[in-house]
Image (cartoon, rainbow, N blue to C red; front, side, top):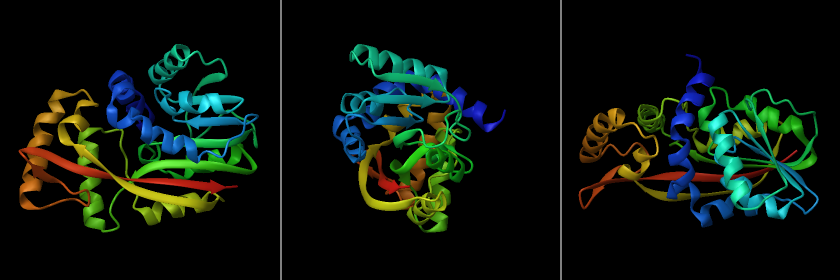
Amino acid sequence: MDHLQRVQQEFTRQASQFATAAAVTRDDLVRRVVDAVPARTDSVVLDVACGPGIVTAMLAPRVREVVAFDLTPEMVSQARQRCARAGLTNVTFREGSATEMAFADATFDAVVTRLSLHHFQHPGQPLAEMARVLKPGGAIVVADVSSSEVTEESELHNAIEILRDPSHVRMLPQSELLSAISGAGLTVEQHTHWDEAREFEEWVRIVDDPDRVSPLRTVVRTLARLGQHAGTGWSLADGKIVFFHRWHLIVARK
């Protein structure tokens, strides 16, 4: 199985859980991303790896058109249903890989992508594609989770993420994330980051695979007891396994 097939397989199975998970759909978190998009009422915006259309649906009332783009048909279906329920008529839905998008150069006024880059084997490829389809002077908004700048912590963090979801490739340290964006010919204009508290049981429920969860729970609980935080604060609180994800929100200009 190649990596794109693995991504499709995972997100086909996760689609319903992902579309309703509080950590993904929480209004204030989505609004934080949408508010960063420098869009106007006449803007055409591309939502790359749109998933179940959570960002798309909040963004659409602010702009002329949103193109919701994702690799996985079931995610596009979820996005279509979400937008239909919201009565949105200015959203177009497209399927495909973000590493080779069938859009002409300089098509979009803005591009947004959330929680996608850590699923790519070479994040520079989708970033270069996003830059290609962006109009000169347009902005790309990237929201993703990072790993530690300490190599051993980053490797442990990503190993745990892969055991939970094998479509995960690598959450980049902040320095590499910013470097990848700059490497796509983009100039970073804004950069904020913050930590979001998570609970293990909530986090693993999204992938909907009990066969993975039980051994992973044992591994992570042991790491927490030993003080191996993996740069994400793995610890025990009132018997619960807790940690955090460090989010980055970056606005870059072409």
